Length: 349
Image (cartoon, rainbow, N blue to C red; front, side, top):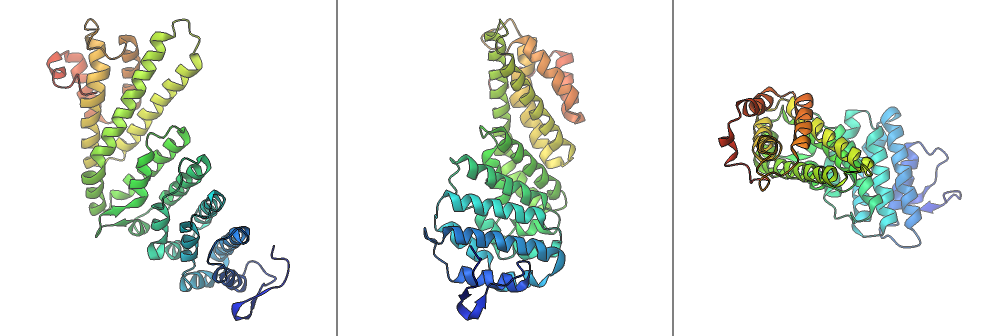
């Protein structure tokens, strides 16, 4: 595609060394001459973005001047402009894939600062992609996950704006907590854990997460786990001939994944988050669904799951979750057998 020597505005011709500042300048002139995406230049623009990414990754290790030029010419704005033109799924997929590769391979923090400046990355995060397209969804959530792995006390300020109380990387990710594709759900868990870890050293962000998102997110998460448990119980009760062991095995594995995720949140040891999560787990899941089903099996109209299933699930809770205030409270209710605790909680699921 770039085999012929060609001149763009300003006398910029293609260079022989594709990993160089001169070649980046050539790519810049390609972008300036192709600001509108058409059928005839779509492939050219995709290859240009790929080439720019390769140069930036090379420059991260060898020549910081490429980032100086990239920032000076505001080249990220061209990426965003291409995306906003609704130029088709092919361009969206290629752009997300290329951005993911770029951020995965950048190692120097200064280079990362260059890429995150001007807020273009946040604009890409909130872009209205067609998430009904599985490939776009996969590359988008992978992109968010890659960005979350770059979070630290310095880079987080590029994502969380305490003046506008906005944190797109986090709020956009948690929208997919119950996505039907398991790999998307796993990525969301990774993103949230990375956010919670870095929030420990940022009180403004911590308060934002607690006050704006923790209650609805944990409430939805607990509801999702409860629905999953009821599905697991139905599978047990309707599969008396054990013909559907594969599905049951998957449901049990998913429940274990949920518990490990909950334990990972709790072991970050953020007091604010732990208080909210513990309250939701005890009063909206463990007590009204797990424990009440175990201690009151004779009240079938109130029982949500089979006692044997409840006992198995509770054993998993005690094996996996290590947060003492939660574990102690749950054990105290079980061993004391005080059913009055259920009168206000048994119908909350």
